[in-house]
Image 1 (spheres, rainbow, N blue to C red):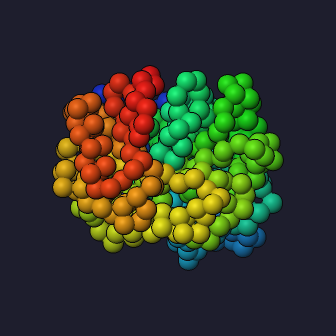
Image 2 (cartoon, helix red, strand yellow):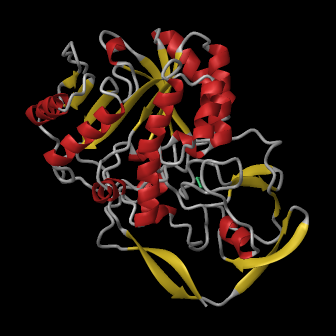
Length: 405
Ligand code: FES
C-alpha cells in the first residue's frame, strides 16, 4: 500500500530549528503523515511524497470497543479508518480545524488524558474516549503581554499614551497565509497548553499590572476551539466585569449562534478580518487553494460582520481589518473594500495593516508610510469615517495621528 509521508528537502533546509523548537514531530520513529511540519516550515523544505509501505495494523479501544487500525498513523486517521467523522470546525463536536497541533479542538481522552488526534501517533493498546466533556479544555497560549495599539477591533480613541490592552495569542489556525505575521505562535505545537481559567487568570494579572482598559485574545485563530474560548470569556468576565473583552478573529467559521454565545459569555469587542474583496485575492493571502472552501470562509467573514452589527451594535464594539501589500492587492480592490464596508456602515472602524516580509514571503517589501496614507485617503473618499492605517512609524487614525512605537 501507499502512504503519504513528508520528507526533508536537504537543499531547501536552512537548519533554522523551527521544526524542533516550535512545531515538533510527535512521532519518534517514523512519519505518520500528519503534515504539520509540511505546513509550518518557513523555508518550504518539507515535501509530500507517496511511499510504498507494508500494511500493518494495531489494536486500540474506542469508547470501550476494540478496533484494528492502520499503523503508522495519527489518531485522527485511525478514528476515520473506523468510520468516525470529524465535524465542521467551530461546533462542539469532534473537529480538526488546524491540523497543526495548536488548537487542541481535535482532542479526545487517551488513556485518561486529553490528547490531540491530529498529531499524536497511534500505538498498540491505546484506549480512547471520544466524549471529552469531563476534561477541562486546553489550548496553547502565548503571552500575556501589554499592547500599546491593540488589534483591528480595539476602539481607536482608546489608543494613545500607555498600554491599551493585555493580550494573549493562541496557537493553531485554519488558514495557511504564506506571509503569516505571527507564525511562531500559529504553528506552535510544543508549548504546554493551558485551561481557559488559567489563561483568564494570567491575562487579568497582566491587565491589572499595566492598568489596561481591555483584554484581548488573538492568534492563530481563537474561534477554532469553541469550548475553550467560551469558557475563557466566562472566566475573564468574572474577573473583569467592567473591562472591554476583545476577540480578534479571521471570521471564517464563526456562526450567528457562536456569536450569540460569545456575547453571552462576556465578549463585548470583536475584530473581524475578511482580508479582501475578491476571492482570488483572498486565496492568495490565505493560502487556501480549495476554491469552495475559500469562498465559504470569505463569505462567512463578510456575513458575520453584518450579523454582529445588526444584532449587537449596542453591546459589541466591532472593527474590521485587512492586510495590504501591493503584491496581492490593487488600489481598485481597496476601493471595492471601501464600497463594501460603506454599504454596511460608513462609521464601521476599518484598520489596514501594512504587511511586512515574514514566514514564507520574506522577499515582500513593507508598504511605505506614503502608500498607507494614500490607502487611508482612498477609503475615506469612499465615505468611510473611521479608517486607521498601520505604518512603520505608527498608526494613523481618524483624528489624532500618533506615533505608537
Ligand atoms: S486540529 Fe489538532 S490541534 Fe488543531
